[in-house]
Image (tube, rainbow, N blue to C red):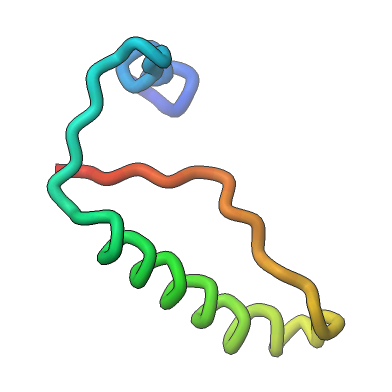
Length: 64
């Protein structure tokens, strides 16, 4: 396997794919809030992003 194109078939799922998570929703929400705060306090400040600009979550995956 060389890169993303090679592994997409291995990780792609459908809405019918069974899901299981080990981390509770509340913990995931806390982790997401911490990541968004980190982005705001580091990257956005360095870029001097306008007030009110928010990061957009493009992917979220729990790995076990």
